[in-house]
Length: 109
Image (cartoon, rainbow, N blue to C red; front, side, top):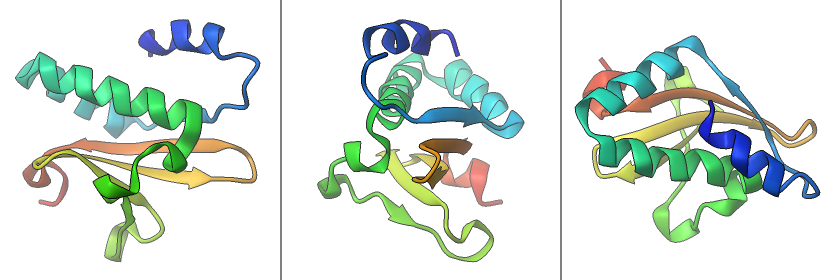
């Protein structure tokens, strides 16, 4: 994603997480962009935070949490009440795999 290139250059000296985008995530992000550009900007901010600091960068007051069921061991964070992002984080390799982004209706059909 091109919006991360600038932040990568600025933060190169810091240890950052490698982001891996699933095909579903890319399609979901395009859907978010078509629906509401403001939601896209909020989503970008969260993605950049995850890239730089991982889960620890998200305030606990915003309640990032692990999921159950099919998404066991995955993390979820509500960007807005009905806009959420799901990711899988591997601390040993400093890797975050972005799984899905969208509304509850989009993700939990």
